Image (cartoon, rainbow over all chains, first blue to last red; front, side, top):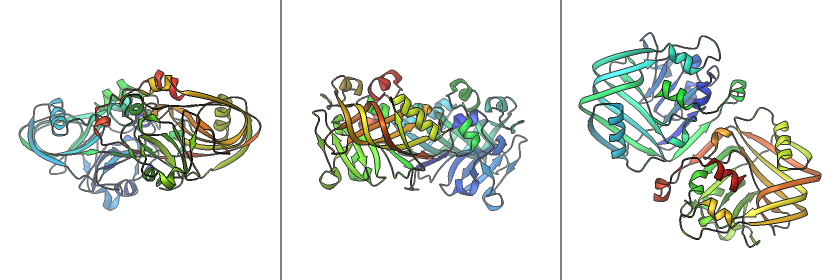
Length: 239
Length: 239
């Protein structure tokens, strides 16, 4: 795919409803880009793809690096990935996720009907991440899995954030608004970004996405699942 | 694109909100498939693509054929198109759009979370089609343009129906449910299908779509438009 075209496997509502057993291989996902996020079979942790390398960030706090080398066959039930090529780069500070969102909007104005891809590198003053710890049963819903999620908080941590912004009218297919995963520079910690601030300047790169390529699973789980949008549920686990 | 992958240009809510001035060329649209439907700049009629040929069906009842030959540069603000390869074919009768929908569902069960492409050829006992007649002002909403639509009714007419079924969770991006355009065998009449029945057997071919490739416009109109889903409006003009 061309730079800044977004490939997505499955839809968020399927994951919300617990369809996380089947998927496609990590190798296939990585063939669509070098910048991405997602999750693993049975919701066992958070995925981040950074410069083409994939990491599994688990709820016990461990990180499995360079999955593309030895774990390319791993099943991915949901992912978003692009060949990221920032059209704008800026150094910024921010005191909250909302402040960060506002700064991204200022950098790429009038993009509320498009997707954005972005990346932030540097030292973050405060970071709170969560990681899901896997389903206890095959169709356990993400909102229930999320109740057992582990939250970790860090101060003065260097790392990278990979993010996608989806337009409001894509809620349920994707996560409307900003969806971000973080990994530390030493690749030892990370997860789904819940809160973040940066008092020192960090580097933000971002690009608008005009093409969205969605692959819908063909398996029985996806066929059966109820895909009615659960706004509140998405807010509580992906917000 | 591979067979039965769906390419869509823009989103239905943009059209509903009157963003119909800009788009991409018909030639570009036709590079993505041979089976499609859509509309024209300023909502001037209904588009159908049948076996790779595009037709403009206008509200005065006229049809401009083979647009790909001399009108490839025409601006298309919204279209859905695929390289159609039916996975199932059946001869059926049906006494209403709902009955037709039920028969398609029976032919491709458990596909409510996927898109479908289908085509019906033969003699229809009764057909009612409408054609939109164009915007009176640049951003006139589809619901208002629709109030001036021309409706034509035919009996015992031979022709072809090109259709797409979109899953409920795609409402606003596409038309949830069945969206069909018809053209007569002599290519003299056609439009957006409002009602239809077939007491003699007609041929139905259909296929499930697992891949959805969405191109979002980059122009100012699309950037500014409000894309909140208008369920009632979509029902009234696309139902």
